[in-house]
Structure formats: C-alpha cells, structure tokens
Image (cartoon, rainbow, N blue to C red):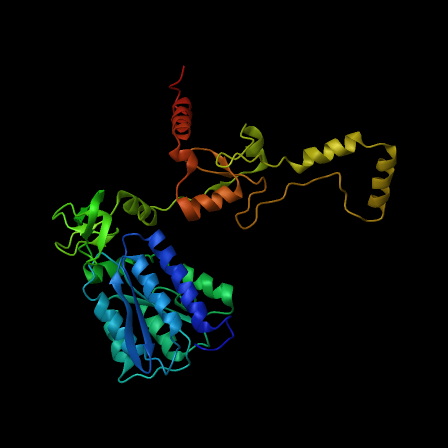
Length: 384
C-alpha cells in the first residue's frame, strides 16, 4: 500500500476515496449500516464498528493518516471478522463485503476455503477491488460468493486513479437479490418498526444516550424519550430504529427506479410545441436542415458557383443535411421524453434526474400531473 503508482500513494488515496465513499454511501442508502475493518501484520483490526453514523466513520478514517501500512494482510482473518459483524443482520437486508486489496498474497492462519464456504452459507457477497494484480484466491472468493454475476462486476483491478474511484463508487448501489437466494435464505416480506422523532433544542446541555456527551440539540426517541445526537441510528435504550421521513424517501428509489426516458426524433419534436427543456428551461437546438436552407437561400450566385465547384471535386454536398440517426441512446434532436408526463428534457437534466434526484420533474410538478390527466381525458374523448 506504500507504492506510488497511484498518487500520492495507494494508502493515502484509499483513505481519501474511502471518505468520499462513506459520504456517498449514506447519501444513497441513509438507513443502511457500514463497518470498516483493516488488516496489518497478519491481523484484522476493527477501524470503525458497524453503525449508521457517517461522521463516526469519517473521524475514524482520519485517524489512520498518522499511521503507516505495515506487514502482510490476512484475508481469512478479515473475512471472519466481517462475517461475525454481519451474522446478526436481519434476513431482509443484504450482507455485502467490499475488499480493497493491494497485496499479491494473503498470510492466513488456516484454510481460507473453509471461510469462503461459511460466507456462502451465510449469503454474504464479496466484491474486490485490486490495486496490484489479479490474485487467484480473490477470483475464487468473488466467483463463489457471487455465482450469478460475471467476474468483471465483482473483481476488478484499478488501472488509474479515476478508474479506482469509479469502481469504489459503484459499490454504493445495492445489488439485486436473485429469487433463488430469497427462497434459500427464507427471506419474507415483513413489517419493520421504526420511529420518526422530532428535533429538540434544550435550554441547557444534556447528555445524549448514544455518546454520553453534553449537547443542546438532538432527537427524542418516540418510544422511550431517550436523546440521541443524529439520525439515522438505533436507540441505545430500547433498540428502536430512528430515522427521518426523508431518509426513507431517499431509499425508495432503489426499489422503484426512475424509468429511462426515450429519445425524441425530429418528427416527434416538430409535432410538439415544447421548444425548451422542462427542467432547466434551456432552449432546444433547431434542426440543422432548416438552418442550411436559410443560408443557401440568402447566398448569392458567387457562393452558388463555389458550392457547385466543390461538389464537382468530389467533396460532400453541404446543402443536404441528413438527420443523424440515434446511436447508443443519444437523441438526434437533443430531446428526451418522459413516457408518463410527456415532457421533453435535455441530456443534462436526464442525467441529473436519473442519478441524483431519481424523480421526474414533470411528473412531480402539479403542472405535469394536470397535463398528463388532461391528455388522457382528451384521448378517451372525455373533454368537450
């Protein structure tokens, strides 16, 4: 991890990307929990226990900057500790382990194949990001814990800093659970008891139940009225899961993702009167054929002879602008249409809606909903 093929070093870059990963992970999965385990000198050490507080994880990561990587890693010890931490996780949750492996060997005290078999029986999936080269035991670990996924999605070696970050951030999206896994593990739909506390501000500092620190602000548990510092968390007194309604809403998009918008052809764009993006109000580009016709009609005879001379030399004719076909999901008109509300959006709003807000502005706005209802009623002949 002290190598400098990734600047400044593998170790420091990993700490930086881990901090960004923690922030993005809890932004996309606010009601999930995360734990961090490190390995050095053949031992596995708990850097940050399993919890849902990103501030505690980031603070523990910052403490590692004063330390240096030392000794050989032990995959078996780290996997055993991770399995013990995830053993009491509820059956409706996913149990995932992400390994950042910068070595070419693993110093294990026993048979690691036994540990891998225990992970498979516990339905724990393992994804690995290599920083040096591919290792045979890592391929075996990724294949056995992810039998339904190709190796390219579970074990990849980072080529550069940007590739390393992309692989890291890819793990923030929860994996799909195969139907066979649900049946084998006995996962069934069940109701979860959660509390939605309100924030309070005390006139004088009082001790919180989670850290025993004097604070003025906090949240009161809706069951036992214990005070906690931040949400989401689990009440230290009664064990009730405490979250905000916004946390639950942000986790909703993983179950029901926003549908992809379809590309709009020039024929569809010409028939519609939407000349600007519904999200950012940016005007859409005009069709190239119309602009070419305006240029050719306003040009004199000299320009006409110049274009004819260029055509006779075998150059392409510039007066005929053929519409560009849609390739790889790119719209020829620069417009993308939501099939529910019928609104047109630009490519920037398309990316922002699907990757950040996970909602369609046209469907969420009152104008978009009313327009969709009016269009449906007109199609059924209900409007006089």
